Length: 281
Image: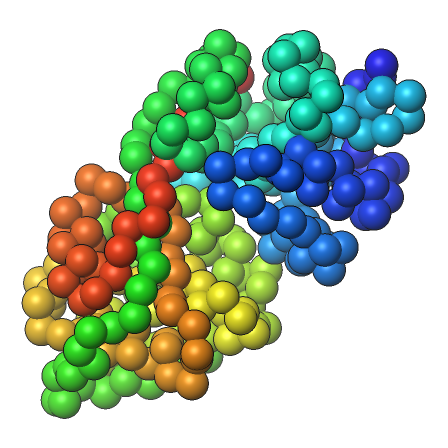
């Protein structure tokens, strides 16, 4: 058995370990090497700060750490923790954290955050054991608009140059790392931003990946004073244009009742909930 960081591990081995570890996950999914490479790039995963658990040279457990900022402070986000079935029950995740936390502290990080699916009690237990505390609940939605009629007195247009200080005036809560400004900036070439304007004032916006085949929405917000006018409905209709799959948005702050009401009213279903958890290093 050996624990070491993953910067010298091949993409093929990383992908194989991920697929084996998540083969029996609550929500089954598998990576191709192409998907893995895009994930590592989009999430800004630093493999030199990501620990791996090796048995006879085979990667059997891992934590993929992403580097970013929240509220102007550096933070490490857990972009994926996995242990292959044959190595579970041996405290692998705890061993990985014990190995990597001193390195993170030495690099100047004082916080790490993750998301875990509600109902994944074994993982939640492990994270709590390692000092993580729940900070908020997040909901994920999927669906198609039941009614696409919206206000016809607004100007909906593409935003080419993102000014986050303007977009953030529409938001009521901070997006999680997976939908963060940082990730959108990294994947900017494929991201599309549509804004709803009234006399050149931005009232709301939506951001989605034009190349995604999954209908993924990264950010969506409407100014609180402008809600219930149909602006959000129109923005989602713009994002859905030409897509043959339902739209999906993950990690909506469950504390924002306005967002929940919007999705349910417009034909979306809540698919799963997650907990965001934070550990002070």
